[in-house]
Image 1 (spheres, rainbow, N blue to C red):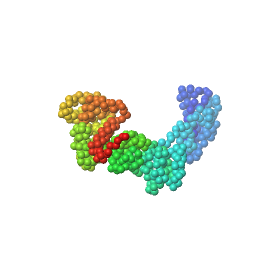
Image 2: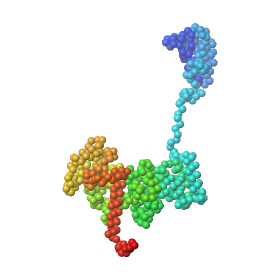
Image 3: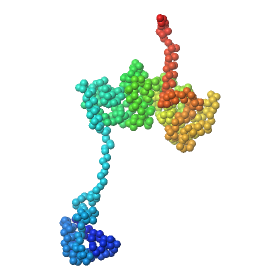
Image 4: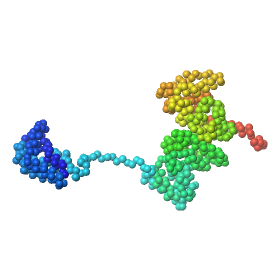
Length: 539
């Protein structure tokens, strides 16, 4: 039914009547005149017949022809209209067909012609948002894809049947732009059936069609190393990387005849990686953690650098040598486990008994050792990295847990005094002038400047560059005394190499010391062959 037609008949807008006798403004100002006109029109017999016919048509579902009825009504009842209508002839009741009509822009449309009455209103065009999520990774750009395929065709032109694992290294390095020691892992990732050959099509399917080409380097390495279905990297996932590095890197060639030290080196590198990268401490490195760390940059550097010791992040052999030798010095029975009495000797008895007890209570980190009361080599690696570089965030978190006795997330003066009491007693035993705790407490708060008074949070420590000294004051006497005397040697070292961390400087000093001790031992235990060599005349 054309409801709009009924509405047009029943409602007369004074503005649309266009009466010459009365202006629209006058009608609006005098509404009773419009009401009188409408009542007189509604009382006409022709109006009643029109309304009745419209109602009957509606009940019988007959299409309503309002314009026809309205026309006949206007002609029939023209004489009955007031004189105000006769002055200008018979006006149209519903002038909605004329584009210039004042109602044309406001006309209603029959629901039968449109599904929504709002469709006639032009809606603002919504901006097209490009796709930003791809379930299987963003597909590579056409130019990048064509360039990659062209390079693969070039490398595979001489290997029609496919590439063997040794020949595949050029693909890893030149096409994938990845470190060469990831070649064998990538090869096995593509050669799932173990055929020993990777064809051109197999590589294209994995690298290009699998959207690996469009990923960043961290995501590429993450997907290559992780096991199928896993959303993290475990320590075991890094072992093939270290095995390949040990067999291919020229800086580690001297270890090929000592497989036991190859294994220890690989373990130490992995421990260092997880210490710095796995900030959650779960033993599983996520993609987010991998991207936030500097491991990818270190892997790329070690692939370009022939001297492994110049890569001080994670891969330095000298750093491994220091960690392993310090552990071996403490492990008196060489069962590869150390206890409290062994650890208390660390750094020439630098640590207090109370802090050693907290370490063995496994508060800062649960031991990986399966023997109760014993610390494994992995546990010691975490300890020495935390002890010798208290400026790093992993170290701050490690020692914060030790000092926070009640585990409420803040360090209070009472907790600090508990650890400092033993320091004070040790200073008295060595006839060192003791420093009262009240003075120490003021010094600590001046250095840290915590947000809340009389308590220190982990955020306060991370915001200060002097946080490491707080822990030295509380439980490491040797470093506390060095801090109080402002050792000029250490100050000069820091100024000469400002980019080195505390751990880097410590490892550098220790390696020199350990190598000199080894040289002296070799000279003192010199073989008879050396001493029995005849002296030849230079002339």
